[in-house]
Amino acid sequence: MSTFQAPKGTYDLIPPDSARFLAVREAISAPLKRSGYGYIETPGFENVELFARGVGESTDIVTKEMYAFETKGGDRLALRPEGTASVLRAALEANLHKAGNLPVKLWYSGSYYRYERPQKGRYRHFSQVGAEAIGAEDPALDAELIVLADDAYRSLGLREFRILLNSLGDKECRPVYRAALQEFLRGLDLDEDTLRRAEINPLRVLDDKREAVQKQLADAPLLRDYLCDACKAYHEEVRALLTAQGVAYEDDPRLVRGLDYYTRTTFEFVHDGLGSQSAVGGGGRYDGLSEMIGGPALPSVGWALGVDRTVLALEAEGVTLELPAATSVFAVPLGEEARRVLFAKVTELRRAGIAADFSFGSKGLKGAMKNANRSGARFTLVVGERDLAEGVAQLKDMESGEQGPVRLDDILTTLQERLA
Ligand code: ATP
Ligand code: MG
Image (tube, rainbow, N blue to C red; front, side, top):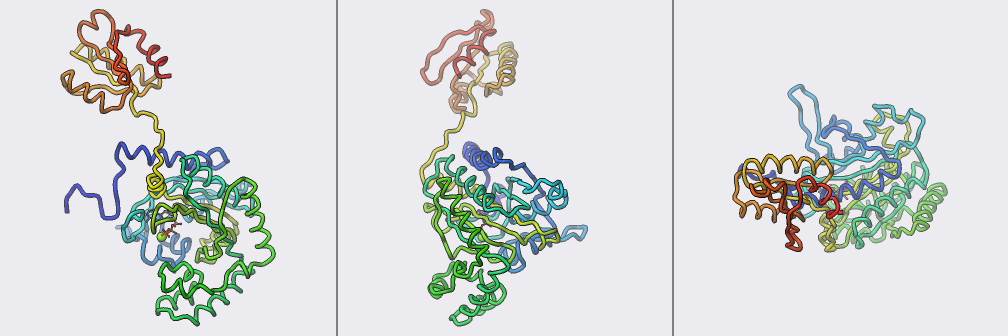
């Protein structure tokens, strides 16, 4: 193994590609920032117990995918595999829910870790932007979150994604469905593991990706036929609100989240250009989660969008983002005095908000101009001894090739005009 190799299932974000990741994070968070969501940041690790309860003991995430470890001090911790449990924990710890301003709306962005089999779109370290709205039960809140995710993807130029929508019922109607599904599953030809899963967590069997299993599930009872009147009305309202905002979705009666604290609205964003790792984001209502981790009843809803897969989706659709040039002006000094003068100019430009860079090290003009070209700068400033004596710099427009002297004192205003 080479020392210069990132761990399996991980990759580095490096320029220039890293700029696209930043732009995707920005684009996803922008609609949240103008919708009352405040930024929250929690640690990269938590007590393992939080995820065991908050993600679910019987989930793949907790049983197979979590990086859990014991510290030298004997604490049992885990790298965070997802964001919701941590955000809810932090909100409860800070008593945000008691400030009398519900729902508490929060957004986050960061790294997540799952020990998975690496493949395209599936990594052991990945990046999500997420949003949680804590402490309110209101179909408009569920609709808001879906609209904001849809707006985010559209603002990036993505078009070939679909929203899958379902309702998981609540503690009234779900147990009835659960029993019916269990009854159905017991009659199938399933392996030992899957049968056991059917006993502990039958809804999760619906999510089994294997074809042999899916075939047998064709006639499985559907939750939508079991929804109580309250859940039906709630779901109808979410759907109507989405439609009224012009957001297209598909009803997917088989879309599930396997745990009891997920209730009612559940949704997934899938992109058709991504092959088997097609989910770019997902979320839903989790009315029972707070109580599950020891808090008060706080009906909540949220989503998490995967940044890595969103970038892959952009590639799949051939969308190129319009990113601002990293450097607008590149300064090339020829000689020691010119270096001091130009360095001061670069500082002045930067302080005025113009992206500027400088030819460092002792290169000749040719090498320095090569760097200027690579930087992508629209303009270069070259100052030699004769220019200094005349109080000017040679300003070159790298696009047109046009070149001419500009008084040192006028450089800032000249560039401000020409870059505007
Ligand atoms: P999948 O079914 O593909 O495993 P998931 O249901 O585990 O997805 P969530 O826990 O809902 O995914 O996470 C939300 C989003 O985070 C996903 O839609 C995806 O874009 C991203 N994501 C999840 N796991 C990974 C991973 N291992 N690598 C890259 N992105 C991921
Ligand atoms: Mg997964």
